[in-house]
Length: 148
Image (tube, rainbow, N blue to C red; front, side):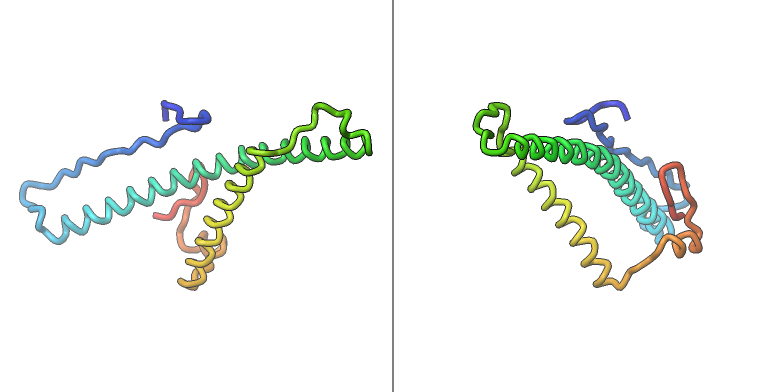
């Protein structure tokens, strides 16, 4: 994808579309309009899918980051527990502070995103397991299932 965004994450570039209509077709032709709207919807879904894959990659990196920092916090807690009442002599201990607030904000954002999706599925009554998706003609692409 080329350029890198903040944090080294590749930016998704917005593609453009050139639609060529045969000379005998006008823009008011219902078939041409229908095709164009279908094409726009397909592109929007592709952009959404690209953003979701990018988010999944970020979540995987985030999971590794959370696991590393969780182990570090557990190590610090064990160290502090071993010091007992002499913990004041440990000058290396620092409270979580701003990092804790950022982690909590990320957790809340992820929780809200998941909760909104679950609510919309419940409202639509949509529950589609992977087996059903495979039966409906979805093919597993290089990154995951893609329905055409």
